[in-house]
Length: 275
Image (cartoon, rainbow, N blue to C red):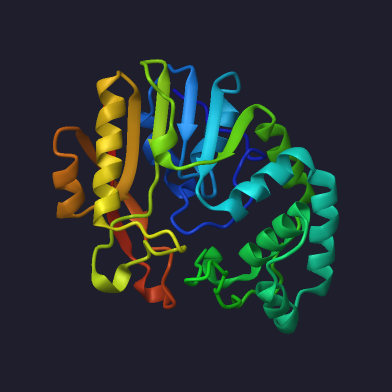
């Protein structure tokens, strides 16, 4: 039986659609053997951190198209102590006015941007990442009494985990996986179940049906080379039809983004594999 990862090796961000609570359901479907791991829709990185705990010797390549997110991972990897210092200052100054002052800022050094990114993530509504058409973060402040903005021990453990990973600002289409020793996990913006549940426009980069089709083509192309490919998405007819030629499994998940707690019901999501 696979070992569950160390509690210190876990996501440092709150992330809409994060997979921390689904890892146990994913374990039976992960491949047993691979040399290289790729995660191009990084987000909170729950699956990446899981493999850091159980497969420390696997080569890991993590990426995303969100420059603020990737900058934050790089700063934790390379400059964690200065970052902790800046986050501690955010912790001391946090209040309503300070939040909106920080939200309106977009300049500064890489470390200042990373600290601001984590601060906003820990204090905004539900950890949601959303940008306006100009690429500026525009999520309102969440209703947290005492949010933990700076967790030095966690950030240091994440920094250690990231030392063995290659972190890059890239699209899923740039993956170099090409043989049976490679495992790729895709966790794209989910296809909406309805017009009112459309969270695919979480940034200025739109992920509509045409992009879902392009991703399926990338999935199929990698699979044809022998690459082990896994993908998460919503359980809907469109996604089922796209991946009809592959193995499709159902997992149970809770709706995380809803302003009303009573509407956060259990739903099924799809886990799709090429192996």
